[in-house]
Image (tube, rainbow, N blue to C red):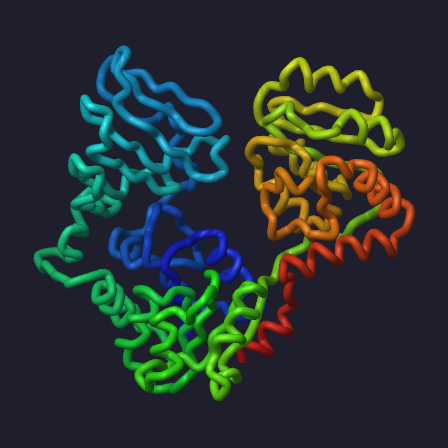
Length: 442
């Protein structure tokens, strides 16, 4: 068995971890390589470029090699390179961005247009360079092996990929053929294929020589609206696909699909969420956590004063404004400006309530961390940061702060209530078990 995934976005990340947890520890082929490396994932590009050695520390933003007299200016979100007053490049970071590890450096021309991009991997090595035309479209991407030599050239205009292997030059008409060559070279077991895209991964499954029939599984992670996607109809209505099961990972998509699905093919349609790892249970401690880079924390004063028995821990990866620092006058408020990783970890481990009540962006994947640690997550509907982990039953309008306060009191006074309210968010998020994965996937 193998997995063939297009890219390592959060949906793919959750699916891969779910499959691994359920016992499906298949080799994973990732088509789009962005410099992220994991022992259980391999891209055709990373395979041919070779494996980096040493410690995976990345390249810190001020370690970028720049022209003489250039200056790098960075913050917790991004960085910029200047030649005196002229900006010459934008720097993008790997997540989490506050670590300031370089992912891409986008070099600008005199008109401020991106003309080339340097791509770095999580070992800090420049593994590729993309040339961009005046219209902002990528033209050519050159990949470099671990010795710094040109190894692969990807032509975005024609779709061609050229692979240099010693004195040999191999040309492929597209990413699909390049990947198929890699899969056969690696000698993977192709009895079953799990994939999550109807684009290139799907067409790869159509061209691979598989002896087993109908063992492939499509994990669908996009919406289903008024129609069944065109390529999905190939699976349902033609005999050239070995896909025997389509698993919807959204309850809404599953419900919509059932209405549109051919009645004689309903046995192919299933729903599965994700298996989330919960390192601990909720311990009913009167400790609440808020992670924010904004001082706009809605109804914080009312909540703090109404719950003197609850300790409110507020952390930020930046300095805090005077407005927020003034909350330090309350005995039940602890403030952590410029919070360090060890303090964040300690607060996440020791808090049993999370309040998603701050405006502006989420930091440190706070909601996911709260969910995985079985904190009760409560929030206002006007500022939810990661909606899939916050149950509607635990969400309030901004003028319903008294109801939120009441639920906090109920949960901390009654273990059954706490379990009920946390149960809402786990059901809403589609939290699955290994046993159900094994039953559905087969």
